Structure formats: structure tokens, C-alpha cells
Amino acid sequence: MLIVDDDPGIVELLRAYGEPWGWAVIAASSLDQALTVVGQAAPAVIVLDWQLPDSDGLASLKALRQRTAVPILMLTVRDQEPDIIRALQVGADDYVVKPFSPGQVLARCGALRRRDRSRSGDASADPRQVQDLLFDRSRRQVRRGSELLDLTALEWDLLTLIAFSPGRVWTRGELLDRIWGDVGEVFERAVDMEMVRLRKKLGDSADRPRYIDTVRGVGYRWRAEARPPEDS
Image (cartoon, rainbow, N blue to C red; front, side, top):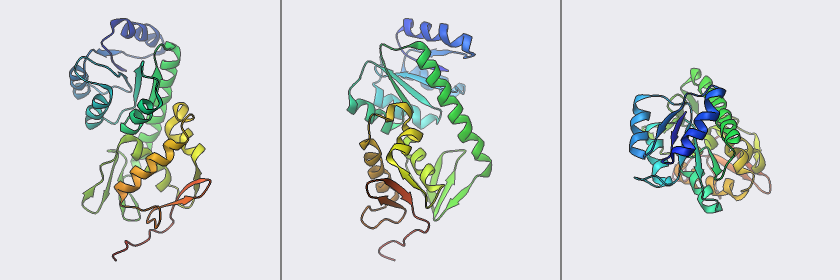
């Protein structure tokens, strides 16, 4: 576990709770240090403070996401809904507000680690073709022809969940539970906001979808067969 926080008290608190649970804790007090650690080691989970001496939360998330796909839990005093939603959209996998229960943070980190291992286990079947999209699960990348789609971690999770089960209708509640976890249960409209961004990157349209159908009043469904582009 990599803890990125410039407060030594928080680092030592999580270390004291984490080591008996089997966590090997590495600490970094700045984004620059965190990037160095990520380049040299392979932490199972990153616990990231929002405000660092050399960076703020969203910039830190973006920088770390460019280097690694491991789960990131934000640990911050910011408790406003826009901050939480934006952090999850940019690449956080979970979000805990200070003051916090160290036991809960460690339990959430354990859940993120198990989920990440489960996803990694699917990578043996790479690459996987779904219609005209090629999924590389070991690298968490999607290509359409020679184009590499620029997806956030959240967009990747949402896209693969839906695309790998064509024809199934996913309710908003199911998507919140599977993708956002405990944090997402509060924000029903987060699914619709994220779907707008994902469709834009796919070149999709809610009115005439190529890939993702909206099931009104329920949720979303991946089309069994892609609709050709309008200009074809």
C-alpha cells in the first residue's frame, strides 16, 4: 500500500492499523515522491490525500493514472458532492472523508485489492474483440482500428462491464454498486453524467446509438449488434 499524505500522523495511524492486516506500507509526502515510488514499486492500492505540497487532488489523480492502473482511494476533508463526483470521474476508485475510521479505510482498500485481482485474472483471454473495439485488459486499453481511446479508469470500468454482457440491461443502481461501490450509492445521476462522457469518446449518440442503448426509466444496454455510422 502506498500512502500519499504530508501528515505523518495519518501515515503512522494507517501503518499501525495496516501492518497487522498484512499491508506493507510505503509513504510519500508529495506527488513527486509518489510518482517515484510508483515507477520503482508496484503498490496494490494507493491512498491519496487531496492537498499535497506540490499538487492538488485532481492533478495528482491524473498524474498517477498516467503511470498506473492500480486502485486509488482518495482521503480528504472535502465532503462536497461536486468534489467527490469529479474525483471519481477523473480516476479515483473510492473516496473517504476525514475524519475517518482507519479500520474502514483498510477494509475499503482490501475490497479494492480483491476487485483489482479479479479483473487481472480476466486478462488471460486478451485481446478481446467486441464489435469494432479491441480490449486489452492487461493494459486497460481500448482501440478502434489504429485509434487508442483516451479513457479514464472509471470509463474503462463502465465500458467493459456493459460491453462484455451485450443485450443485458444494467439498472443505474446495479452500475452504481458495481462501478462506484459504497460511494456511488448517493449519486444516482453520476451514472448518466459518466455515460455522456463515455458516449462522446466512443463517438456514440443517445438519439441514434451505435453501441449503448438507453432503456428509459431503467438504465443502459450494450447493443447486440453495432449500428453503422451515419455516414456509411
